[in-house]
Length: 312
Image (tube, rainbow, N blue to C red):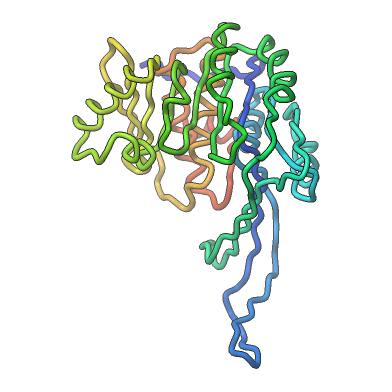
C-alpha cells in the first residue's frame, strides 16, 4: 500500500450527530472528612472540550481540513460553552436548537490522570425536529462529497435512515460511527466503524479473527454496506469490503493513556481521505496512525497535521 500523506485543504466534510460538552475537574485525591464523614476533594483545575460529533468536526480542522457541523442542542449554559469553544476553531457550526432540551454534558472528576467518576446530564429529545433538521442539512449536502453520522445514542440521529437516503440521492458517501443494537437504521450506508464491543453486541462474541471476519461479512451484506471497519483497540483495525480480501491494520500506539475520542479521530481521518480522492485502504492507514497518537493523550484529544507527519 502506498504510504502518502493526504492533502486535506480543499476537502469539506459534513458532520451530523450528537453534540456533547466534555467537562473535566481535576483533584489531587487528598480528601478531608467533614463532621458526617463525607469525603471532600479540592478541585484545583478545570477545563472543557467539545465531544461527540463536535469532536469529530474539530479533529477534521486540526489536521487542516474543513468541517461543517450540525447537531441538536438546547438553550442552556452547556450550549453556550460549545458555541464559544467552536468559535475559536474553524468549524462551520449550524446548531439545531431544541426548546426545553438539556444539552448533553459529561463531567469527569480526574485524579492523577485517572477518572474517579463521571456525571452525565442528558435527556431524550421529545419534540419532532425532522423538518427543522432537514432545512439545515439538505443545502449542506450539496456542498460536500462525504458526510459523517456520529451517533452517541442521544437522539439527534433518530432520523438517520432519512439522512442516508437524502445523502445517497446527492451521491454523497455516508460514514457512520454507530451506537446501540439497532443497526438497521444505518441500512445502505457506505461505511460503518463500530469498535469491537459495539460489533459483538450486535453479532455475538467472536472467538478469533476468522470468526470476526465471517460475522462482519454477514453484517456488511445484511445492511447493504460498501465496507465495514471494526476497531479493536490494541489489536488494531480490520477493514472488510465486498469482493476484496480483509485488510488488518496493526495498532501504532506505544502506550494507551485514554481511548476517549479515538473513534472520532478514526472516522474523521477516513472521511478526509475519501473526500481528498484517496482509496478507503489509504484513508484507513492514515486513520490508524492518527488513532495511535490520540490514545497516548489524556481527555477528548485531537491531533495536529505536524504530529501526523512526524508519525508517518
